[in-house]
Image (tube, rainbow, N blue to C red; front, side):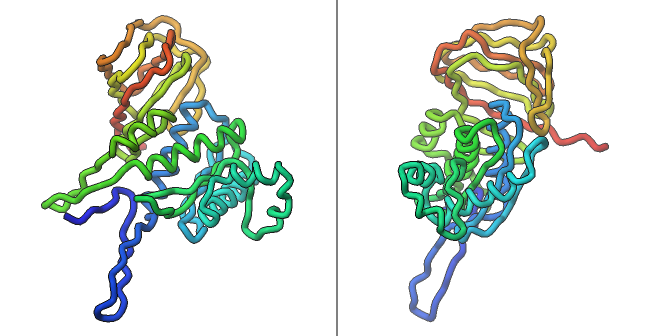
Length: 291
């Protein structure tokens, strides 16, 4: 059975008769969009004030870019530079910023080089297929966290084609464990999402206007408040609102093994979190209503 990747296509290079055929994973536009969606979702979960997210292929060529509302204009060029640097030099841009801070200033003379934290390579099956760069979040560290979440969404998902030609997504246990260690999305599509969520502290009031959350608690405990009224709710991304607290609502203690379904549009908030609080979230995304 031929293995295919859910978010990449295979570029097959054939030489003369008798030459060896080489399979090379290549980043597709669908994959680039998935990276951006995961980084955007991570920004919404962290209350990032804005960001520009850029994705390039392994040659440093721009494939997709999204600029969130409220982000400074120069962020576009910076995010592209970070993504290109990560892809071409095959390392997170944080590495180069740290080297320059240690007096390796000659590196700044390199062409197509943006040594600012917030760019990471995108790897599939052990090979670098591109890079993602983020600029304009709350801090350089948050830039990198969004980029890592985007890259992880593509790296974690491996597909296998069945006899009917329909791809089945396979998420290896090692990738799942890595995702839970960071608390990042495992998979993001237009119709559903799978997140390996991790909480170390109490959260904000959240409202997902299109996503219905199906939660399964893996480890730890927390109190979940649902319903009521989200106070000072503001948009932090497409179809995502955050507030300072919830007035009213129902409180439930969550422990390992519990399952909760939160319909879209329902305010919810986690408090009394015992770290680490780990839980799978499957997000079923409702189609946009016709306007």
